[in-house]
Length: 113
Length: 118
Image (tube, rainbow over all chains, first blue to last red; front, side, top):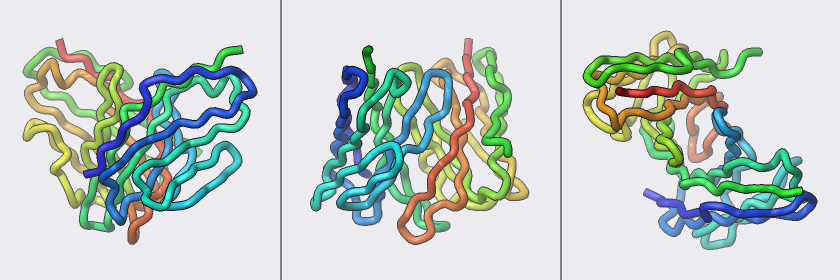
């Protein structure tokens, strides 16, 4: 199973770009990489997902190197409302065959004015 | 247009009692997931259902834990003979499907049930 490692916490200021890296050295061929955001007392919310190279959507970018042993979530120009815990999820589920989804321990991002 | 709902939102029980947690997924979502989040910890994957079937139950922490899903909709997670270490927030999520092939569908999470075992 792919164990994931993330920094426990990060600090940033409004308007800055934030990059959070997740290490997953034992990622399997079928595993996808997904990032979620969680606010206190709420369930996680999907941010972005990728398999390799770069993925971009309206809120973030995800960079995955060729060896796929790590991934970096990039949040452009963060605001105070981006203060949350960010989780890296690695794994795959094969239809009707099972599988595992491994969440990292989360990175607590604090954005300051 | 309701999201994933869970009940109860909070549950306090005595050690040794059984508890049942309920999850109502988003209508039309065939996949349903259960996670556990202990205080200050990350999310621990417990089990997932594709339709009514749970292909892999090995993520359940012990044989005191069981889960079922009927009618491809509502799911219940049952914990028998609760222990203090079972205290956590239990999160449910649903998605359009579980992985078909190798992809993973976006999961929508409920607000969770906070279980406290005294």
